[in-house]
Image (cartoon, rainbow, N blue to C red; front, side, top):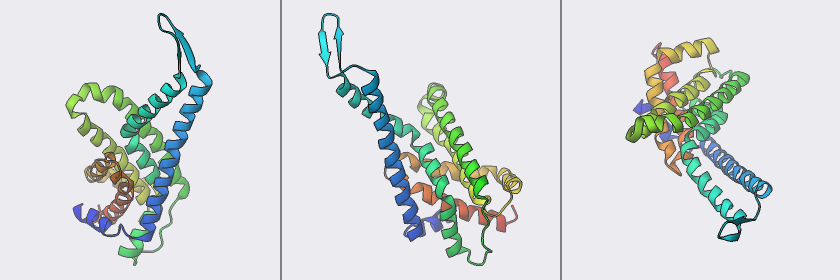
Length: 230
């Protein structure tokens, strides 16, 4: 598995990798600004700019206060949701990364025949699952695990991200039933690889390249397992 990661890291300067990274950054920024803009619009529409409080009288600047508070809230929320958001973005471009890896390391393979519809359905279904699980995790995992929350968070997201990466890569060359069976046979390896990817996804700036490295690593993992008949 370390060899898979090192091969992926060695290709990070590939132009096709850099293109996916830049697209991911653009989408992440667009999402951040879009959500914050919606918050500000809701504040403007639903709250008064001045309120009258007992003993204090009229307090102005409510919109400004709520605007700064919503910014702080978004920054904190983004820390917890970075893993699922980055995972969702990576799902959109895994095929591009996998194609670049195969062109360099497995040129003898026949062209892949990805099922675009299946891959899209897989990504959208998993995106919803990841968001729900992470929101529930904040409410349930945090009080239950306490100081071990970070480990539980990484493990949970590793399970989901591993499934996403592996299935999207495998569906390029296998029917869904065969890809699913292969993932189940190698459950431990897929989960461990997904967990190793989820850890740096929590680190700002580093998380910008991890989805690409994850897609490349799982491409190598898939071909290694396939060559071993696993």
